[in-house]
Amino acid sequence: MTMKEREIKRAVKEGYARIAKHATSYYASRSCCDADIPEEISKRMGYTDEEIQAAPPESNLGLGCGNPVALASLSEGEIVLDMGAGAGFDCFLASTRVGSSGKVIGVDITSEMVEKARANARKCGYSNIDFRQGDLENMPVADNYVDVVISNCVINLIPNKIMAFKEAFRVLKPGGRLAVSDVVLLRELPEFVKRSNEAYIGCLAGAIMKDEYLEIIRSAGFHDVVVAAESGFPVETLISETTASAVTEKPTISIEQQKEVADSVMSIKVSAFKPD
Image (tube, rainbow, N blue to C red; front, side, top):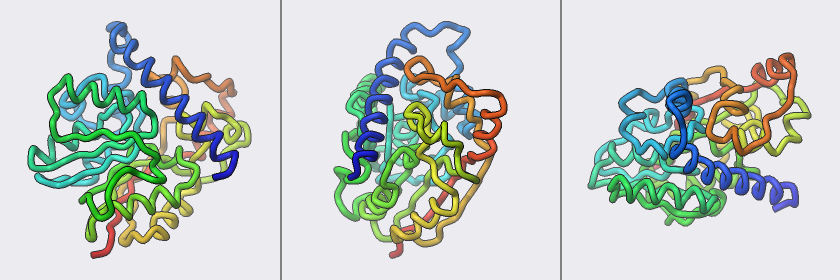
Protein backbone atom coordinates (compact mmCIF):
# COMPACT_ATOMS: atom_id res chain seq x y z
CA MET A 1 0.00 0.00 0.00
CA THR A 2 1.35 3.41 -0.94
CA MET A 3 1.65 6.28 1.50
CA LYS A 4 -1.14 8.09 -0.37
CA GLU A 5 -3.43 5.09 0.00
CA ARG A 6 -2.67 4.88 3.72
CA GLU A 7 -3.45 8.59 4.11
CA ILE A 8 -6.76 8.19 2.30
CA LYS A 9 -7.80 5.18 4.40
CA ARG A 10 -6.89 6.99 7.59
CA ALA A 11 -8.91 10.04 6.53
CA VAL A 12 -11.92 7.89 5.65
CA LYS A 13 -11.77 5.97 8.95
CA GLU A 14 -11.45 9.15 10.98
CA GLY A 15 -14.17 10.90 9.00
CA TYR A 16 -16.71 8.12 9.34
CA ALA A 17 -15.86 7.66 13.01
CA ARG A 18 -16.84 11.30 13.52
CA ILE A 19 -20.02 10.75 11.51
CA ALA A 20 -20.99 7.75 13.66
CA LYS A 21 -20.39 9.67 16.88
CA HIS A 22 -22.25 12.72 15.64
CA ALA A 23 -25.19 10.65 14.41
CA THR A 24 -25.90 9.43 17.95
CA SER A 25 -26.26 12.96 19.29
CA TYR A 26 -28.02 14.04 16.09
CA TYR A 27 -30.84 11.54 16.54
CA ALA A 28 -31.08 12.30 20.23
CA SER A 29 -31.45 16.05 19.71
CA ARG A 30 -32.86 16.64 16.22
CA SER A 31 -35.92 18.85 16.00
CA CYS A 32 -39.05 18.64 13.87
CA CYS A 33 -37.33 20.89 11.35
CA ASP A 34 -34.46 18.52 10.57
CA ALA A 35 -35.98 15.15 11.48
CA ASP A 36 -36.67 14.16 7.89
CA ILE A 37 -33.28 14.97 6.33
CA PRO A 38 -31.85 11.40 6.10
CA GLU A 39 -35.29 10.06 5.19
CA GLU A 40 -35.76 12.55 2.35
CA ILE A 41 -32.30 11.79 0.98
CA SER A 42 -33.09 8.07 1.10
CA LYS A 43 -36.31 8.61 -0.85
CA ARG A 44 -34.33 10.42 -3.54
CA MET A 45 -31.96 7.45 -3.68
CA GLY A 46 -34.75 4.97 -4.37
CA TYR A 47 -35.99 3.73 -1.00
CA THR A 48 -39.73 3.48 -0.37
CA ASP A 49 -41.48 4.93 2.68
CA GLU A 50 -42.11 1.36 3.86
CA GLU A 51 -38.40 0.48 3.67
CA ILE A 52 -37.36 3.65 5.49
CA GLN A 53 -39.84 2.99 8.28
CA ALA A 54 -38.89 -0.71 8.52
CA ALA A 55 -35.25 -0.14 9.54
CA PRO A 56 -34.10 1.29 12.90
CA PRO A 57 -34.15 5.09 12.49
CA GLU A 58 -30.59 5.54 13.79
CA SER A 59 -29.26 3.21 11.09
CA ASN A 60 -30.22 5.63 8.31
CA LEU A 61 -27.52 8.28 8.02
CA GLY A 62 -28.52 9.43 4.54
CA LEU A 63 -25.13 8.45 3.10
CA GLY A 64 -26.10 6.13 0.24
CA CYS A 65 -26.45 6.74 -3.49
CA GLY A 66 -29.01 4.06 -4.38
CA ASN A 67 -30.93 1.05 -3.09
CA PRO A 68 -28.83 -2.09 -3.63
CA VAL A 69 -31.22 -4.23 -1.58
CA ALA A 70 -33.97 -3.72 -4.14
CA LEU A 71 -31.52 -4.36 -6.98
CA ALA A 72 -30.39 -7.65 -5.39
CA SER A 73 -33.90 -9.23 -5.40
CA LEU A 74 -33.17 -11.14 -2.19
CA SER A 75 -34.93 -14.39 -1.32
CA GLU A 76 -35.76 -16.24 1.90
CA GLY A 77 -32.82 -18.18 3.29
CA GLU A 78 -30.02 -16.40 1.41
CA ILE A 79 -26.75 -15.25 2.97
CA VAL A 80 -26.00 -11.60 2.19
CA LEU A 81 -22.82 -9.57 2.68
CA ASP A 82 -22.92 -5.77 2.83
CA MET A 83 -19.53 -4.21 2.02
CA GLY A 84 -19.29 -0.99 4.00
CA ALA A 85 -22.35 -1.53 6.19
CA GLY A 86 -22.10 1.72 8.14
CA ALA A 87 -24.77 1.91 10.83
CA GLY A 88 -26.56 -1.05 9.24
CA PHE A 89 -29.43 0.45 7.23
CA ASP A 90 -29.18 -1.88 4.21
CA CYS A 91 -28.39 -4.85 6.46
CA PHE A 92 -31.63 -4.38 8.36
CA LEU A 93 -33.62 -4.22 5.13
CA ALA A 94 -31.85 -7.34 3.84
CA SER A 95 -32.47 -9.12 7.14
CA THR A 96 -36.22 -8.85 6.70
CA ARG A 97 -36.05 -10.18 3.15
CA VAL A 98 -33.91 -13.24 3.86
CA GLY A 99 -35.86 -14.09 7.01
CA SER A 100 -34.87 -16.19 10.00
CA SER A 101 -33.49 -18.93 7.75
CA GLY A 102 -31.13 -16.45 6.10
CA LYS A 103 -28.21 -14.43 7.35
CA VAL A 104 -26.73 -10.98 6.80
CA ILE A 105 -23.08 -10.04 7.37
CA GLY A 106 -22.15 -6.37 7.52
CA VAL A 107 -18.47 -5.45 7.22
CA ASP A 108 -17.15 -1.96 7.91
CA ILE A 109 -13.64 -0.62 8.47
CA THR A 110 -14.70 1.85 11.17
CA SER A 111 -15.12 0.46 14.69
CA GLU A 112 -17.48 3.26 15.68
CA MET A 113 -19.83 2.37 12.82
CA VAL A 114 -19.72 -1.34 13.71
CA GLU A 115 -20.51 -0.55 17.35
CA LYS A 116 -23.41 1.66 16.29
CA ALA A 117 -24.77 -1.03 13.94
CA ARG A 118 -24.54 -3.68 16.66
CA ALA A 119 -26.34 -1.37 19.10
CA ASN A 120 -29.12 -0.83 16.55
CA ALA A 121 -29.45 -4.60 16.08
CA ARG A 122 -29.63 -5.28 19.83
CA LYS A 123 -32.11 -2.49 20.42
CA CYS A 124 -34.48 -3.72 17.73
CA GLY A 125 -34.06 -7.45 18.26
CA TYR A 126 -32.38 -8.50 15.00
CA SER A 127 -30.86 -11.97 15.43
CA ASN A 128 -29.75 -12.89 11.89
CA ILE A 129 -27.19 -10.10 11.36
CA ASP A 130 -23.49 -10.32 12.13
CA PHE A 131 -21.60 -7.00 12.04
CA ARG A 132 -17.83 -7.37 11.66
CA GLN A 133 -15.04 -4.83 11.60
CA GLY A 134 -12.66 -5.35 8.71
CA ASP A 135 -10.92 -3.97 5.66
CA LEU A 136 -12.93 -4.38 2.47
CA GLU A 137 -9.72 -5.27 0.67
CA ASN A 138 -9.24 -8.21 3.07
CA MET A 139 -12.61 -9.11 4.54
CA PRO A 140 -13.16 -11.42 7.56
CA VAL A 141 -15.47 -13.69 5.54
CA ALA A 142 -14.86 -17.24 4.32
CA ASP A 143 -14.37 -18.19 0.66
CA ASN A 144 -17.47 -19.16 -1.36
CA TYR A 145 -19.75 -18.39 1.59
CA VAL A 146 -22.40 -15.83 0.60
CA ASP A 147 -25.15 -15.82 -2.01
CA VAL A 148 -25.23 -12.06 -2.57
CA VAL A 149 -22.82 -9.15 -2.08
CA ILE A 150 -24.31 -5.67 -1.85
CA SER A 151 -22.65 -2.27 -1.37
CA ASN A 152 -23.94 1.27 -1.26
CA CYS A 153 -21.69 4.20 -2.19
CA VAL A 154 -18.62 2.65 -0.57
CA ILE A 155 -16.31 1.11 -3.18
CA ASN A 156 -15.51 4.62 -4.43
CA LEU A 157 -13.90 5.31 -1.04
CA ILE A 158 -11.45 2.42 -1.38
CA PRO A 159 -8.03 3.20 -2.90
CA ASN A 160 -7.56 -0.34 -4.28
CA LYS A 161 -10.91 -0.97 -5.97
CA ILE A 162 -9.55 -3.98 -7.87
CA MET A 163 -8.77 -5.76 -4.59
CA ALA A 164 -12.19 -4.87 -3.15
CA PHE A 165 -14.02 -6.46 -6.08
CA LYS A 166 -11.70 -9.48 -5.98
CA GLU A 167 -12.70 -9.88 -2.34
CA ALA A 168 -16.38 -9.69 -3.31
CA PHE A 169 -15.74 -12.38 -5.91
CA ARG A 170 -13.84 -14.55 -3.40
CA VAL A 171 -16.58 -14.65 -0.76
CA LEU A 172 -19.41 -15.33 -3.22
CA LYS A 173 -20.58 -18.87 -3.87
CA PRO A 174 -20.35 -20.01 -7.50
CA GLY A 175 -23.42 -18.56 -9.19
CA GLY A 176 -23.64 -15.82 -6.54
CA ARG A 177 -24.48 -12.27 -7.49
CA LEU A 178 -23.25 -8.73 -6.94
CA ALA A 179 -25.55 -5.70 -6.55
CA VAL A 180 -23.80 -2.36 -6.10
CA SER A 181 -24.89 1.28 -6.00
CA ASP A 182 -22.00 3.69 -6.41
CA VAL A 183 -20.75 7.00 -7.72
CA VAL A 184 -18.72 7.12 -10.94
CA LEU A 185 -17.40 9.86 -13.20
CA LEU A 186 -18.39 10.94 -16.68
CA ARG A 187 -15.30 13.13 -16.89
CA GLU A 188 -12.33 13.89 -14.68
CA LEU A 189 -13.00 15.86 -11.51
CA PRO A 190 -11.47 19.31 -11.03
CA GLU A 191 -8.18 19.29 -9.13
CA PHE A 192 -9.62 21.17 -6.15
CA VAL A 193 -11.97 18.21 -5.54
CA LYS A 194 -9.32 15.52 -6.06
CA ARG A 195 -7.13 17.11 -3.40
CA SER A 196 -9.92 17.34 -0.79
CA ASN A 197 -10.13 14.78 2.04
CA GLU A 198 -13.61 16.09 2.78
CA ALA A 199 -14.67 15.36 -0.79
CA TYR A 200 -13.17 11.89 -0.44
CA ILE A 201 -15.23 11.21 2.68
CA GLY A 202 -18.23 12.52 0.77
CA CYS A 203 -17.71 9.91 -1.99
CA LEU A 204 -16.47 12.33 -4.65
CA ALA A 205 -12.68 12.44 -4.77
CA GLY A 206 -12.32 8.65 -4.83
CA ALA A 207 -14.71 8.11 -7.74
CA ILE A 208 -13.30 6.84 -11.05
CA MET A 209 -14.50 6.88 -14.64
CA LYS A 210 -17.58 4.76 -15.36
CA ASP A 211 -15.92 2.55 -17.99
CA GLU A 212 -12.93 1.92 -15.73
CA TYR A 213 -15.23 0.99 -12.83
CA LEU A 214 -17.10 -1.59 -14.93
CA GLU A 215 -13.86 -3.01 -16.33
CA ILE A 216 -12.52 -3.52 -12.81
CA ILE A 217 -15.60 -5.59 -11.95
CA ARG A 218 -15.05 -7.75 -15.05
CA SER A 219 -11.34 -8.11 -14.33
CA ALA A 220 -12.18 -9.45 -10.85
CA GLY A 221 -13.87 -12.40 -12.59
CA PHE A 222 -17.51 -11.33 -12.72
CA HIS A 223 -19.71 -12.12 -15.72
CA ASP A 224 -22.86 -10.45 -17.04
CA VAL A 225 -21.88 -7.02 -15.71
CA VAL A 226 -24.92 -4.82 -16.31
CA VAL A 227 -25.68 -1.19 -15.47
CA ALA A 228 -29.26 -1.62 -14.24
CA ALA A 229 -29.85 2.12 -13.78
CA GLU A 230 -27.99 5.40 -13.83
CA SER A 231 -28.87 8.94 -12.94
CA GLY A 232 -27.40 12.31 -12.16
CA PHE A 233 -26.20 12.53 -8.58
CA PRO A 234 -27.28 15.38 -6.28
CA VAL A 235 -23.84 16.55 -5.22
CA GLU A 236 -25.33 18.92 -2.65
CA THR A 237 -26.36 15.94 -0.51
CA LEU A 238 -22.67 15.18 0.00
CA ILE A 239 -21.72 18.60 1.25
CA SER A 240 -24.69 20.03 3.06
CA GLU A 241 -27.57 17.78 4.03
CA THR A 242 -26.54 14.53 5.70
CA THR A 243 -25.64 13.92 9.31
CA ALA A 244 -22.06 14.12 8.05
CA SER A 245 -22.38 17.84 7.41
CA ALA A 246 -21.64 18.80 10.99
CA VAL A 247 -18.37 16.89 11.10
CA THR A 248 -16.86 17.46 7.68
CA GLU A 249 -15.60 20.74 6.33
CA LYS A 250 -17.95 22.00 3.63
CA PRO A 251 -16.00 22.87 0.49
CA THR A 252 -16.06 26.55 -0.34
CA ILE A 253 -16.79 26.52 -4.05
CA SER A 254 -18.58 28.82 -6.43
CA ILE A 255 -21.87 28.08 -8.21
CA GLU A 256 -19.90 27.47 -11.41
CA GLN A 257 -17.62 24.99 -9.65
CA GLN A 258 -20.62 23.19 -8.13
CA LYS A 259 -22.10 22.78 -11.59
CA GLU A 260 -18.78 21.53 -12.95
CA VAL A 261 -18.66 18.88 -10.24
CA ALA A 262 -22.32 17.91 -10.67
CA ASP A 263 -21.88 17.47 -14.42
CA SER A 264 -18.95 15.11 -13.79
CA VAL A 265 -20.68 12.71 -11.39
CA MET A 266 -23.21 9.94 -11.92
CA SER A 267 -24.90 7.40 -9.66
CA ILE A 268 -25.12 3.88 -11.10
CA LYS A 269 -26.55 0.53 -10.05
CA VAL A 270 -24.55 -2.45 -11.25
CA SER A 271 -25.39 -6.15 -11.16
CA ALA A 272 -23.05 -9.04 -11.97
CA PHE A 273 -22.61 -12.76 -11.36
CA LYS A 274 -19.85 -15.13 -10.27
CA PRO A 275 -19.75 -17.99 -12.79
CA ASP A 276 -20.99 -21.41 -11.66
